[in-house]
Length: 478
Image (cartoon, rainbow, N blue to C red; front, side, top):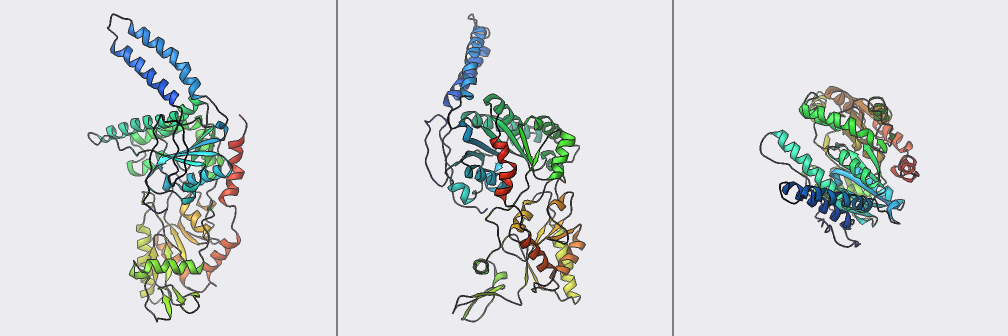
């Protein structure tokens, strides 16, 4: 996902429903009568509190008003129409543009005729298919920072409180949704708030477990920190209250059942159709664009050909070929989080350079964070040992072999010596780079074998996987 110049415009809360198509694809939220009822209820209660010592029996009056408004509010919140059964809210308390799995959920739902209200932060531009789909409405929410003075716990508490009110406002004022599909983590406070709203409105609540929030927090605070322990209790308490649960690995499915008493359906991450091997012509065009910015991609040549350090395009017939003396291109994407230690890669590259200085016949390496490549490296270590790196899924979608650092359940994705290699430290990674690139650029070596295996074993795509595992939950009768 690349950053782009786009702007979201949140709709007025109490406007009459409108629909229009634009790049931001915004649609307003309804249920204004419910919001009005809530406002009157709050005002009635406040009137009772501030007038407690008045000669008029205001507490009794306010309670009577509240008692009268509660049924009105409840009926308004649960009022179904002919479109309710075809509406699903997809919720992520994070950046929509950096939540590919939730974007895939939204697209799959829209393909089956559901109208999707996609709620989340709007920092990064979502995929173009999400923006152009008329059945997907993006409702942006602002990221809350919390109070920046006093102890950190005050900042954290105020952030949770404001986020809770923010989510309540959004979820209670949108049209009634048949399902709310929420990503976890982050789950604090979204799990509790979403469960409460679904209870009030009669919607089905689905949690998609990507990991455990408390294990991610433990990376920076330690497992014994009070906030981490509170987050663990929170997930254990509210997680089982969902109507249905999805998870990303069988290992997590087993852990949820054993330790959390949660029955979940495994939905493996699969590459979307956009991920595929890049044709040579498009590779060359990419390298040319990169060469205009990064000198490492440039290569001077004759006027009869357009050259980069990797490829050549003959200007006479526009044919593109790869240079025999090209360096190997090593790719590694990252989210720069605590569960990725890039010092492992840097140390391995130093050892790789030592192999060359020692006389090994190895190609030079050009390392980038994204793009077409000969070999991918994954340094993601799951905080829980139960999730899988999305970057490897995308790399495999492009038939790119991978060297990945070991953690529990990784073998559900990376098959050692079949579609890649698994390493434990920088020394082992360096040896693997040496073994894989010793025959480069020939396709007869182990690297070529891995790529051929990936081409031959392209399994389920995301759409088929989703239709098999998620669609039955969405369409199941109440």
